[in-house]
Image 1 (cartoon, rainbow, N blue to C red):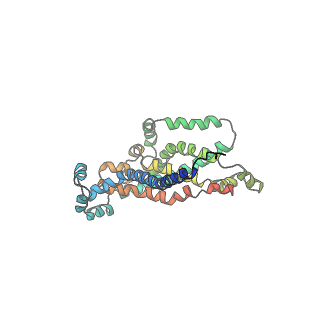
Image 2 (image 1 turned 90 degrees about the vertical axis):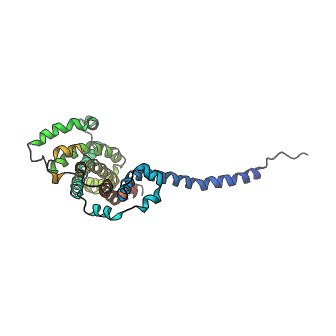
Image 3 (image 1 turned 120 degrees about the horizontal axis):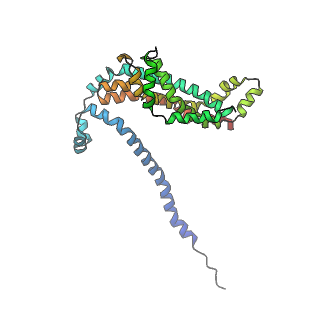
Length: 290
């Protein structure tokens, strides 16, 4: 009786094992190559001014002679002297104060606005939420001149408080629309349980809802902070005293070398992300599922 034809599966399996193993080994390598390539692209605009401050050369000269030739002519002392005694430090301090105040106020007001739009039914709810999109589409230059004329004869002109209020009006639509979809993901039974236990609506919002919304609030703060920190038009129109100018305006007056300025301007942003990174990665919202 003839034997049934059975394919030789063992050889196919054995021949496919090295290929599968090689692919599994190459996946982490390809992933790391991609990630570090993207990191390099992001760091080039930051590192290049610093390199020019340490050894001022033309880009074509650097590409022609290489990194070793550039390193042989590096002078660290002038760079450190410019970093320690940079004339841009008062402007930097003004920018940090204004941006931090804007970030805190924008995140706080956006939290209440987004909570009301997401949790309550009221007349004009849809209109008010969509009206925020209109503000997002208005060019900044259209608002700048009327705002300047409005502030001109008031104590808000040439003051950081007036600049913070202008930035708050500019960033609030962005932060509110950022928080509305985030708040909608937080289940309502958290507040209902707090109300059943005797908490007021404000108490449930402050003690139960906001602690679970920390990642979203951190994202709103960072967004408003960066918009205010990098803003130029309002700062140039609403601030007249040189000592009150913010960093983007102060840079136009040539207060230092590009390498020193890039380092000085990057430090506050790095500090903000280092302080708030745990709110993005901790996943506190997942506590509902436990």
